[in-house]
Amino acid sequence: MKKSKLAIAVVNIIFLITIPGLTLGEPEQAAAAATIKGYVKVKKKKKVRLYKLSGKHSNFYAQSKYRYPYSAKKKIGKKKKMAYKIGNNSHWILAKDVKVIKKSTKRVYTKAKMVLPSGYTKTELLSAYQGKPSKSFIDASMQGMKINDFSRLKVSESKADDETQVDLGQLTPQQIGDLTAFSLRLINEARNDLNLAPWVASGGTGKLAADIALEYSKNNKTIKDSHYVPGIVRACNANGLKLDDNFVEDMAGFYNPNSTMTMTELKKSIYFGLKQMIFGYVGSGEEESADRSYYQEWEHAGDLFNTQGSLHDGDYNYYGFSISHNDNICSLHFISVPTYIVKSKKYNSGFEP
Picture 1 (cartoon, rainbow, N blue to C red):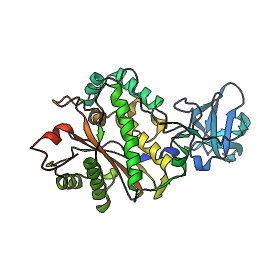
Picture 2: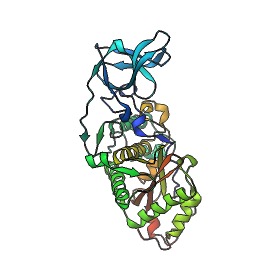
Picture 3: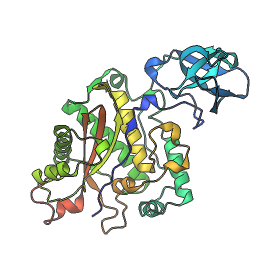
Picture 4: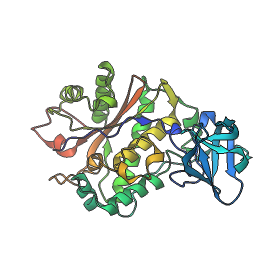
């Protein structure tokens, strides 16, 4: 039996992490949606240098084929050049180089999808899981971070998601049910690409997930503390699983100082966390995903795809999802119980999926 490892360093909330076109070369995206005042576009068909607030050059350029959301306009540097602040990483573009275009208010609705690119195979994943990722597999993982773009584009699944405020400390059963279905759909879409049997949502695993989240909340633990193994073990034992370590939890998370957020924002955060686990990405934001050095860890992918070089490779798990919110950090608990544990008299003393 393989242990689940810590999924991710604390992840910045999705809306605050991306500058379109700078590192990824993506089309129009939404960054810091609440503060966007408009968009700017490079005047001529060329790329232009970006600046820091001090007036010094940054290491990035803006390209004419993209439009960039800006949140401020002011004079920067000793020479007091007028500039627009684009994205959230203190990148400024000189006013003389751009024209302002009207801010789009149209919202696009689409179902989030999770697709594995060519080159992401069970054989390659197993090598990566064992600490030997090939260059081609890292390339495929980088492509996966790029093409699965729901977390960074200005889209949502529904108007209702945009308008629904979620209390991170007290999600309703319906909200947990919706998020369980949302995350499981994405996991199973990726599993289907590897010809794996789908995971199955179950009431027993849902209760286990809720109990694990409660252990984190009661003991003021978060993803920043790594897996809270004593609490996971207590929850497992209370639910009829004779486990003495963490064999059920994969975890992602993000910093969020507010106790509420929209369902759309929460889904985007969950989506990004799943991307990180599937594609071995340990960066804290989308803007770092073009850097190969951030692709380091596929143990979570081994869990999600039951590909660990064991006798139980290819099995499926029973699934539940929960959230805990402590110290301005939202921890996302992806809980799964392998079928062989459910069937085992050694490990199962009363757990019913």
